[in-house]
Image 1 (tube, rainbow, N blue to C red):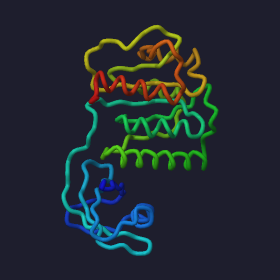
Image 2: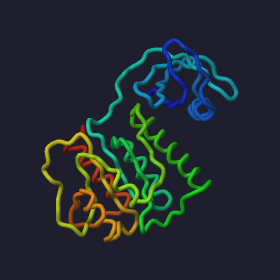
Image 3: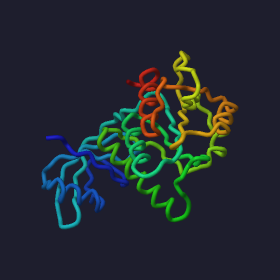
Image 4: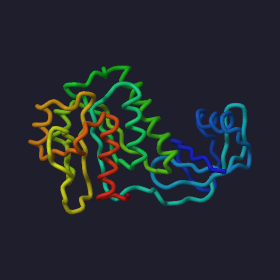
Length: 241
C-alpha cells in the first residue's frame, strides 16, 4: 500500500511528536481511515522529508511520531519560471497542478490585456490561498519536497523588466522560430498568454526585454496545453527529463 505524503507548515525534527493540522488530520482519519501505527511521510516545503508513524487518532486530530529524515528533494537542475496570463476557472488551476508536477520552480500569474479574470481585494486573497493548496496537493502527489514559489498576480508590463533568467521564451504561435540549440542554461523563463494569447504589443515588449519568440509547431495550443508542452520540452533539453 502506498505511504501517504502529508504537507505541514510546522517545523519537523526527528524524535518529536506533533499534532497535524485539522485538514491533514481529517484526510488521514476520515478519508483514508488510518489508525495508530500506520506509516506516513511528512514534508514542510523547506527541503527533504521525514518518515513518521501515526501515534494517536482522536476525533479531530492525528498525532504522529517523526523518525528518519531524508534529504532528497527531487528538483530539476534547471531553475524554471512559468509566467502565464491568468485564465478562467479550472483551466488555470489545472496549469498550476501540472506545472508543479513537471518541476517548475516559480509560477508568476500575469495580468495581461486579454486577462478576463478579476483580481484584487478579498477575491485575490481567496484565489491565492486556493492556488497555494493546489501546489501543495501536487507536491504531495508528485513527491516534491520543495514548493514552487507562487507570486501574487502582477501586470505583465511590471513583471517583464524584472526577469533575469539565462534564457527567456515567449510562446508565439504566429512566429516560425523553434527551440534554439543554446548551451545548457541554469535558469529559464517561459511567458505564455491567457485565452486569446498575448497582444502584439505585449509580445513586442517581451522581445525588447531579450525574450526569444518560440513556437511549438503548426497547431495553435490552448492556454492550458501550451505550458505543459513547453515545460516538458525545456525539462527534456536542459532539466531532468
